[in-house]
Structures are given as C-alpha cells and as structure tokens.
Amino acid sequence: MMGPKPGSWAAKFRCATLGVWFAFGGQSSFWVHLPITAAVIAIAAWLNLEPIQWAVLILAIGGVLTAELLNSSIELLVSVLHPQHHPRIGQALDVAAGAVLVMSLAAAVVGLIVLLPPLYGRLFGV
Image (cartoon, rainbow, N blue to C red):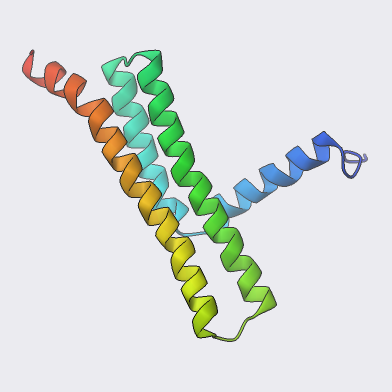
C-alpha cells in the first residue's frame, strides 16, 4: 500500500499529524497542558457555554498548544544543529519557552474571564 504522493495536501496533513502525535507522545510539556485542557473543556461543557465562549476558549487552548509545538520544534532543531551548549542558543531557547509562558498566562486569564461568571452563577444561583 502506497502512502500519499509526496508534496500533496494529504502528505502534508499526514506529516503535520505525525508531528502533533510525536509532540504529545515525546514531549513532557504536553502532559502539563493536557489535564488542564481536559478540565477546561469539561467545565465548559458542564456550564453549557454559548458558542462564542467556546470559540474563545478553543482559540486560547489552540494558542497554547501551538506555542508549545513551535517551542518543541525549535528545541529539536537546536539539538541536531548545535548540540553543544552556547549562551546565545540558550537565550533563544529561553525566549521560545517564554512564548509558551506568555500564551499560557494569557489563556489562563481568558479562561477565568469566560468561565468564572457562569461558574459563579451555577454554584451560587446568582
């Protein structure tokens, strides 16, 4: 059985999917994001959020996971291209990790803005 033709959309999609699976399976950072993502989705479902609220949460979650994928790809490239320690490369890796931190903090704020009012209302009947 042959795979998709190299360069085709099917091949690109396959490579992208493999990359996501590799990141989820081989990068420990994703194991921090997964339970938080699951909890946010479960709470949002329990609160029966409006479609726009879902969209905002999904964009925030997608932003965090995208930042983590980019950070992981930079780490992998550096480990191959320049495996020995170099201060400037270390700074570049720190900046990439900082991007994940900034996106994660922004997503946490978004989550609080979206989830707290309906959660408060559900818990306290207000």
